[in-house]
Length: 85
Image 1 (cartoon, rainbow, N blue to C red):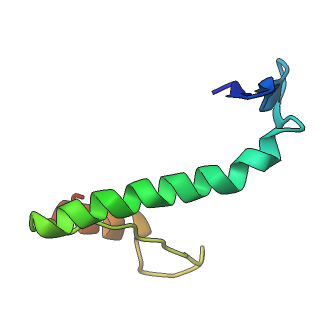
Image 2 (tube, rainbow, N blue to C red; image 1 turned 60 degrees about the horizontal axis):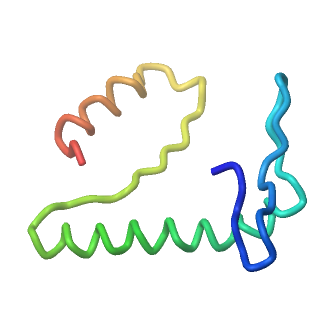
């Protein structure tokens, strides 16, 4: 999505160069509604999954780099094998 079309025409959302992508003037106005839309879509998907018996969600993990004897990659792999969705 490069632009947003509204009653007054098109508005650029991003400014792109060969080195970076940044929000254009209209970009920040779309961030909050876009997050709300994505959250609503996730909520609808989760509601359907709940009715059909599936377990679904997001796991957020914080890791300290210096934990001797703990292999975070292996833990995440085991978790994903048990709970693939």
